Image (cartoon, rainbow, N blue to C red; front, side, top):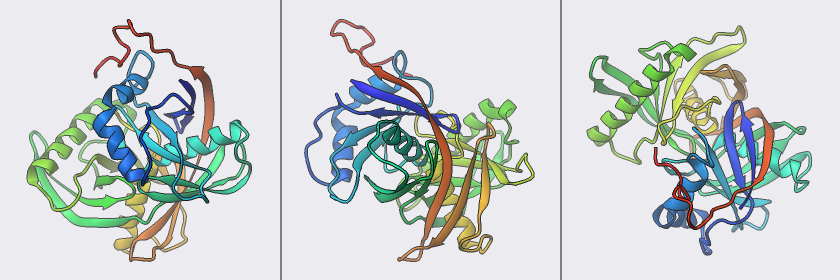
Length: 307
């Protein structure tokens, strides 16, 4: 299996160029559902140790339905198949440029959530124009043992997020284990509460920025229960939808979002056609490795080491 690994703001992306399962034809959303339903061992084998690593997100290249797209892609981590992935799309664009498949300029990429565009500025820097994003619920409160009531918004940015601002725990590197436990408890409490609409699969906790230009610093829990090293592109899209809904950020205005490890994205939005926002996320990625993964039949960890 031919793969290229990159990282975007510290968050790894593994682009799978060949050797993936045959998912048939049809909409990418249907093919993504087949991947989730029928190919869990494949997903685990390439995301989990010993071939993968903590927080690995994979980008499986597939034929797009839309002929105007340079590729189709289905993203997944060790916990779930994803609708969209912002850091992964930045990493994918840089990987396609590394392969000579695209050059500087604008390109369309098809995902299960819809078609997104990438502007490749140079070998590392990319702007993603994401699918239309929106706030789904305002000010939802859940109880967490040892913390008490926690209130946040639920928003869609290609995936579904619970956004808490401010976090009841400081958003710093030293607090990552505590933030992880809190975010898992919040997601469990939301699922138990049975809120209308698609279930929350990510949780974001916000704290003050640690640099003069930063708007805020975030901690993002992904479906695999690992934290996002980047500021999370789909999470930033959900954040923009909430800020816009509250009148806290004007269309076209730019902010800098910091991640819990200090990497950054530049964010802005424009009005969407159905009342949401069209987010723009600018970040950088770097190719780290080009590899052929080998899956020997007698390997006891051929399908990965379960987390």
